[in-house]
Image (cartoon, rainbow, N blue to C red; front, side, top):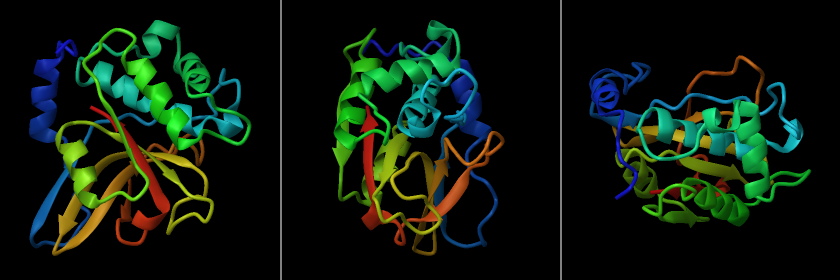
Length: 207
């Protein structure tokens, strides 16, 4: 594979110390959290800030693959800034004034990760299962998630999020997300209940 990890030393360190936030009660526990930086969709220089949530999610994933995993994926440095990366993905994903549809996001993100490597596949599911989430995260692949027009518990309607982790505690599953909107300083990792939101999410990921 041509993804060629050149950041192995950093990744090994992250594997040892970064994963789980201690926010859940003691008990049977299983989970993983990826080190994905949040990118704000309304940062200076973004051409279409009101409809850039999908491209901003793509930018988070591209930066993660390049900076953390060491893959040959074009990140913000190639385009001069994170805003320019968002603008580039806006075109690749055929985004428009109301946002980004699921299939064009999938097709555009796949086009982006394969600029410099063919060692990729793309996947999407409009009826996702928690096993798909855990499989992707365990393979160190963050996911794009689009909510439907009705919204979900604690999530905005018709919006894109980045799924960066999961945990299970006594049979209760939660997913960890980064929100490209919600203010300049909304950098926190947000944990949401899977069973309350799974019927209202479409997911897509690269591998």
